[in-house]
Length: 195
Picture 1: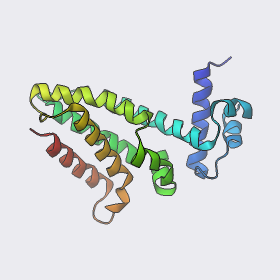
Picture 2: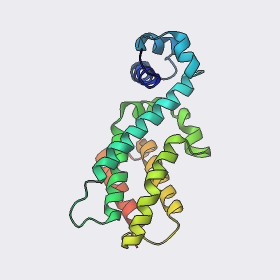
Picture 3: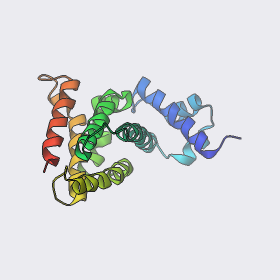
Picture 4: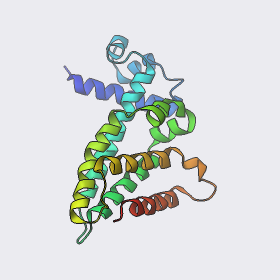
């Protein structure tokens, strides 16, 4: 028998395929169950509706991006400051989100799904990002590459800046492409964090 974690991952994988193919509004829990090869009650026991399922899917995908970028950021370049590594990591997360089919689909066609997490409160994925980011900001302050200030405040502003840059990419599409947007984000974050 498959573990609970494996079943959940299979359901989330199926949800990802459905959302990428049909969008959130046209995806049903029945579609997801069919694609995952599980019964409808198996899906309904875990998620009451598609919105809750997609929220968990977005969290999983963002955590995967954060982990991949964190691993890449740990491979320090000789003589690289903590600020440089932090900014490179943040830019990598932005680049990965701009390239991710689920995030681009949601931002382009169903941005209202992100409204709560953009305007009202932090979600699980925000907290995961902040848990990784705050200690790095503090480390950068200790090595002198990050300006003084409350690490929680600096980390929160970095997170909001990356999030808003990614979700607002269409507002600058007429003046720069996504690579240029990430370059500008890098400059913005580096200047913000510099002593």
